[in-house]
Length: 380
Image (cartoon, rainbow, N blue to C red):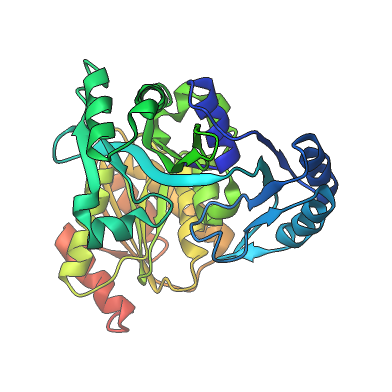
C-alpha cells in the first residue's frame, strides 16, 4: 500500500525529519488560503500515486496567493497517467542548493534492510542505479541493533556532504529508520532531501510503501489507502478477504493457498497458456467467499476459461462446490470451467458439480492442460 506525499511527510515529521511547511488542499480556495499563510510564494504539488508528476505539469511554482489559486484550479482538473488529481499539497517554496536521494528498503538477498543515499538526488533513482551505480552508496542495517550513528556518518562522508550538515543528516537517517521500522514499511524514501539557500536540510518530497500484511497493526494508516490507484477487482476482493492480482492472460485461476496458486500459474504456462490472475481464497473459505471470488474472476472480459484448483484440507471441497454453483446461478457465465478437487469431502464436491456439467480433472497437470486446450477452442 502506497501513501501520498502529504501523508508521508506528516509521518516523517513525527519521527523528527525536517519537512517543508505546507498543507493539503482539496479545492483552489483552500490552496489560496494556505499560500497566504505561507507568504504567497509556494509550490503546488498534485497528490497522485505515480511518478513523473513534474513532467506532466503536476508540480508548479506560484509566486502569489492569487497565482496559487489559479494553478490549483488547473492542477485539480488534471489526470496524470490515468489517475485524477483530487488534492494538492501547497508547500513553501525554498531555494535549493543541492539535492540528495535517501531511502531505506529491504534487501532480500542480504536478508536485512539497506540504507541508500546518493548525491544525484532529485531524479529517477532507478536511472541513476542503472547508468551510474557508483553514485549510490549503501549500508546494511542489523534489525536487532538498528541504524548506528557511524553508519550515517559514513554515508555523509561518501557523498561529500559538508561537515556542517552531518549532525542533521544523522537525525534524518535515524528518523527514516524509525519510520521504516515502526510503520512496518517496505520502502521509505526522500527524493529529494535538499540543502537550502539558508543552509537547512529539508525533506522536499516523501514516499512510503507499507506492508499490507501488517496493516492490522496500523488501522490509522489503513484509512489512508487511495482506491483510485487500485484495480476495482482488487478492492472488491479485499472486502471478502481474498488475495487477488489481475494479470493479462486468458485463464482465470481460483485456488486455495498462495503456494498452490503460484504452482497453478506455473503449470498453466508450462502447457502454453497464460494465467489471467493470481487468486487465493485462503483456508477455510466458505461458499460466500468462493462465490465472490468467482464473480471477480468473471468480471475480466479476457477470461476464456476458469481453472478451479482446490486442495481440501481446512477448506472443504463441498463448500467450494456450493460456492461455485452459487456464483454460476448469479453471474450466469458463458465460458467453460475446469475443476480439480482433492482432499476433504472431495467426492461430495464432485457430485455437487456433476449436475452443472463442469469439466473435471483428477490431477493438476490434467486440469491445466485441459484449461489451455479449452481456452484455444480445443475442448467443449
